[in-house]
Image (tube, rainbow, N blue to C red; front, top):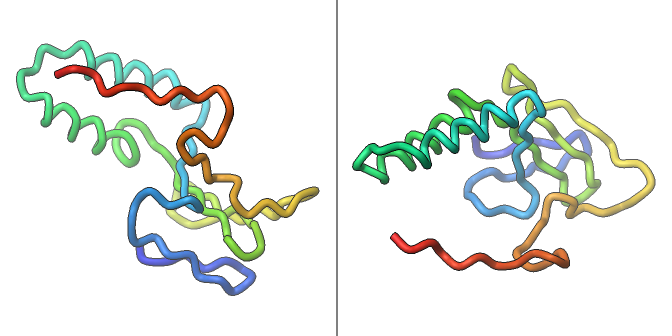
Length: 120
């Protein structure tokens, strides 16, 4: 997907990862299946860990676990949330004008501790 257009007229690009205006929503119904699937991958005795990682990434997002994409217009602040058909429902913020609600840069919030990579 290259871009999503907000009703205000701004086109939101979706051409790379790690964007401050893009995110994913995991419904409460999918939370424990997500945890169970992660546990299954972690506890697996499969020798090819790279294959397990790719299976996890493939199945989380569009396979076994369904995450919906969410974008925030950087001009008007509207949230565009993907529905089951790949279309977007638009929500207008009330009471604030924060156009960066999806931007959780590392260390931005208090109490976040940067973890060291696990030994392989």
